[in-house]
Image (cartoon, one colour):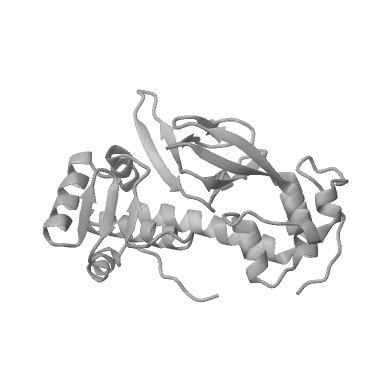
Length: 260
């Protein structure tokens, strides 16, 4: 474990005088925070995580359809979803929406604003959602002395780039929908939700936009999966009944995971 010591700073980048940060033994972290999870899994203790805790600003609850940030706004912070779900999207001049991604509890929004120093898309809540806000200037300073935070930022950036390249590839509708369902299942499982049964926070039209498919195509594929006994769907509730078949169908599109 890196034993580097550093001055504790809060979200505004100033020296911290908060008792929470001075008394590291009192630090407790939100279970859905991706950054604290990365530090704890790498062996960092409470005293090392105190500065990270000071960066966290809990944002008030947003109702469904609220903007977290808008395209063109100056990039100042990253947002970690605590509860709920968010989509990022772009709107064309004629008002058509292109969904770029979905974010679940424990996942980070805003990484694509690092360059060119402004948010390149809109981020909207899909349901009632809570966030933790991390000042990016303060986070950058912390990453320079906590290598695990820096590595985690790089991994998050790499994941964003990887998903974008996968969506740009030539894949069938079945491959895209199967990979999407398996990916959601695995992301929920990492947060303690049963991997075979979950609720879709997004609409069918949002899924279709994200997968670069027509809504009718997504509906046909899901109907076919249901007839084959791979999934059961009721409203937005999904039960994955044949994970091996779904994984095989979506394998061409899904990223290859390696141990770290």
